Length: 325
Image (cartoon, rainbow, N blue to C red; front, side, top):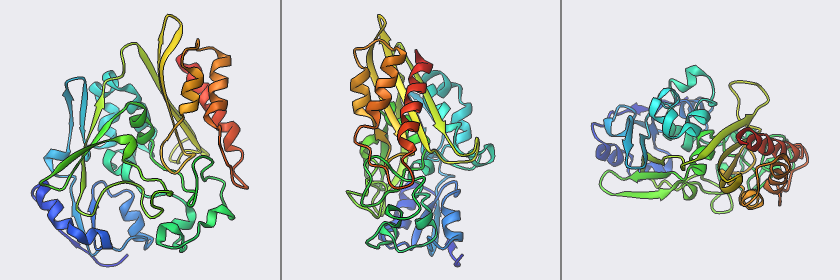
């Protein structure tokens, strides 16, 4: 790890000013929980000359009720989200997903903003191969070791997005607030993530001097049920082989509304719109859940060593939906 300086901004505006345009060149970096950034620095994946901590800023902390939902500061710890009575009551899907992140020790350090903005776990990227993520012009996983890589919407890079909270927030229709310290913008979370087809070097839309400040999460729809299911190699402290966040509203025995979002199978949280269409207007039976699972993988293009993810994803979607039946 290279030497670096450490500043402590007093306000959000000061933090954004300290980032400036140098963030674009890797000379400064935001430090929230640090569970991803410090690992990158130890592995020489990131070498910022200055760290700008933001977790202490009060405007980025806490869970507050708003009309029709919750406002969650981006520096709120995942453990606080898991344990929050407001989250458990109003958006239980988010509490479920946050509870699947890492271990209790990690959740007591990691923030929700950091979980959304973490870098990929691909071993080629993490081992400093000159791939797309490092400014190269090749994805080594395409023809190499690709057991854990994308089967949906992959290419030119076949990373999978590592966040557990992201699929849940997409399924809930959340909005993120982004600030430069003096100017703010709100973006639907579905538009926050950047696919490799848009730009293979980045995973989100944040500009050099922008900071993710808050997530606005609407209450779960009246009469809906939600679930988050995650399949891993190990039972704890692992990233998803496949995960499913599902929100289903059933009225009169018929599915009136449904949102299904997949994690661990695509470079960004993957909205399974074909699975939703297959289920909408149908009774939530085992046959309908199985059909939705098959539809969720329509268009899948597995690589040489990850074809197992196709039937796995189908089974996890089916299991998630039947848990709501």
